[in-house]
Length: 589
Image 1 (cartoon, rainbow, N blue to C red):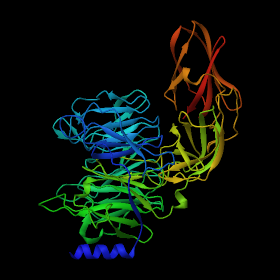
Image 2: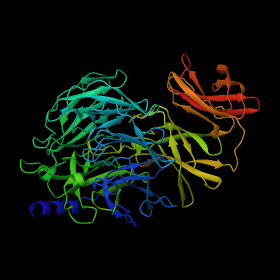
Image 3: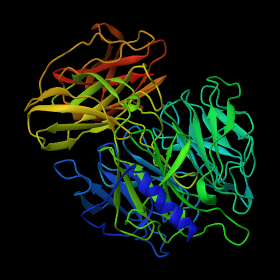
Image 4: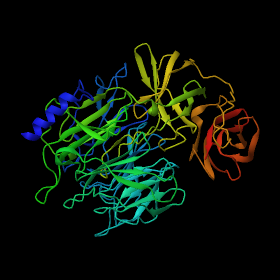
């Protein structure tokens, strides 16, 4: 009673935003993670499908023609091959969705990838049948691969790590971690290293992508793990450059990165009020830089996961937590905080769902932080439906929302919103050049493709990072494909070209994988006849940097193009076979 009174008193003194229920209920009950796809739609895991009540079915939320998720529509997408609850999840740079493991369900040792364009799931071959992902953590690496933790090997817990390659759809064994990563929250730092606190300890370590190794970091001054369930909460990069970790205990901690492989600095953060904590709980950084949190009473020897859930906003500028109401307007939700799920929407709100419920809510924050606003410098037309956006801060301040180890719902990738009057469309983005955070003045790019049936004419374009939109640039859409070449005099921080347009060939008859590429890429195209063909790689100045002559067969052709000695940048790849000319873009990293 005293806790409730103090809570309500704080609510009256501090307003941080507004809860708004979605107009339509989802067709199935929530069972976990919510993911924003690169076309602006949202995938939500449910408890439907399968025979174990764990669920294999996802619902999809599509905003209405005005861009409203509150008035959006729900549909079902194809079910996974396996049921899974509490597992790894990532949106890949090609727009596909990766999931692996499950603490519960049939998919504990299995992974699969969802292809939105065909509404199908593709299995990922196992690296080792003894490996179990369970509720392991994961992170997107700078090259677009996935750093994947492995919870157990056989009957033993493990520090094993593997790396998933989306291009080959396969795993390789990664470097073994120094301490157990089970139940840990992973945090991506501005140098793209991955920080976590070893389970049930105050030791920390980091994965350095450029070295492909784990290094020991500094010790924490407070304990974040409870001693009963060994749980903890979320982690974020704050706008001031510090990391912020939320404990299952009522403790929090700040981390100041060193910027290199040397130790960072840990300091104690504010204690969570009223002896509350986050034993597996969703939190989300909002566009105003504050963090929306779900908390429950801290674990005890008799129970790790207590009811109810209270909701707070953390303000890093005042080092304090402020209480808010529950989504339904009450002071709390009669469920443990691990029921909570959040994701950052492209409209600047936080989508909230609770396990076992099909009523979703938006939390609409007050204001937006200028430091998190992307800068859209220019837009280059590659064809009538394909464009390149160029600017800065396309990845945002932090990765978005966070739960801890049990699933990942990052949104630190660019979303493109197009508007005219009160009509809104979302394009499909892919192959953004960075998967980082807090990139400040570094150059960012992303490809985006318009949705089919979008009306021609002039539209305002914004790039959105974690819900925070850039200023608007105007583009005029044409009605039919054009045969044109546009050279853009734009360079990245190393002086390498970043964009050249395609020159008008049939866009759907040639494919490259991987793209972006480093040492090689496979060129796949269809030829109407057999015979000789030439393949040219052209830079922004129009200079041919590589040319090969090969023999084509009628039908599908695959050629491995080696890229050694070619500078980083975006090029035009031209395949010519008599009167047949195909071209596409290739980004070299």
